[in-house]
Each structure stands twice: as structure tokens, then as C-alpha cells.
Amino acid sequence: QIGRDAQERVARDFHGVTNDLGGGDQELGEILIRAVKTRTSSEAVFEKKDILGETAKISLGVFSAEKIETAFETILEEGSMVQLGSVKGVDVYSSREMQMMEQTIISLINQSRNRHSALYKEDEINAHLNAKEEEQGWKFTAGQRAAVVAVVAGKDLVTVIQGDAGTGKTTYAREIKNLIEERGGRVFGVGFTGKAAVELENVGVESRTIDS
Image 1 (cartoon, helix red, strand yellow):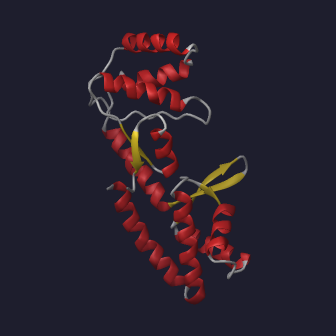
Image 2 (image 1 turned 180 degrees about the horizontal axis):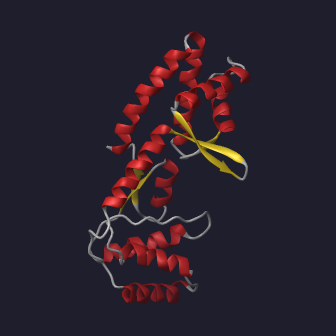
Image 3 (image 1 turned 180 degrees about the vertical axis):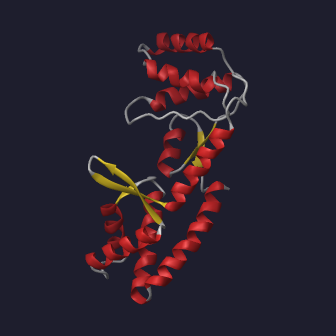
């Protein structure tokens, strides 16, 4: 529902922006918005060059690079896209739909604190992970262990963990799933993007995007 509400509100804004462009520029604005939606179906953020390239591809070269860039800046100025900052000196953007979804989720997280009974004690989790290490022949990192404990021994309805690429999120997500299912729970995954949902599916978690 979060995703659908955000989509409806942003769709109305997009319609207003493309109407303001007028004529062929209106058509270009609609194509650019399609490019944004295509990009955010797999990635929550994007670079300007990604959208310019996708727009040129969809429009089959009908519009010049200058016109596409002007449409990008117009939609950005109107607020239907947002600049989030920069990563390694490169500006990154997202759709306002994505930003609205994230803000709603943050609000729900803040309301969820201390409203859940822990499924496990920390020593039970460590015993499970120790046994798994013996079985697989390699050890979990301290960060992976802390993540598992935070989820299955925590008392918040929502636990937020940020992990960079290559830090072993898939590995500990599998153990979180196993522990919850051992206590009779069901694990279901929801991702902002199709890519995120697929990554959860890869560890055996039935998943879908927020939009679906």
C-alpha cells in the first residue's frame, strides 16, 4: 500500500510537469519519466547519465542530447525527482516516489520500538552459529553475528541493518531465516527494487517488491 499511495501521488505530479512542458517537449518529459521508472524498478538511486541514456534509447534518437538534458533539469526543478547528494564526486538522484516510500518506512520503524518479544537469547544464537561454522568449515564475521543477534534477539518490530557490498548480507540473511523458521515463524521478503527481491530469493526467502 505504501508503494501504491506514493505512485498515485507522484503520477499526479508527473502529469502536471509534463503538461507544463508542452508539445513535443511534453512527449519527451513523459519518455524521461518512463526512463526514471525503468531505472528505479531495479535500483533505488541513479546517476544523471543513466537517465539521459535510457531516455535517448527509448526515444530512438528523436530528441537531441541538449533537449533531453533540459527536460531532466525541468523535472528535477519541479520536484518529481530529487538529488540525494554525491558519491565519489558524482551526483546521485532518485524519484520522489522512492523518497516518499523511504520516509514512510522510517516513520513506521520509529513507531515499532520495544513492541516485540525476542525469539532467542544471544547465547542460543551463538550456539547455532558455532554449529554452523563447524558444518561449513569457515567462520562468520563479528558483524554478521551482530546482525543475526540484532534481528532474532531484538525487541523492535523493525530492525535496520546497513551492509556494504561484499560484507556477507546474503550469508547472515540465510541464518536469520533458518532461526526464525526453527521457532515456527515464516520469513517473507520485500524489496524496494526487483534486484533486492531477487537477492532475498537467492537465500530461499520468498520475496517481492513493495510495488507488487
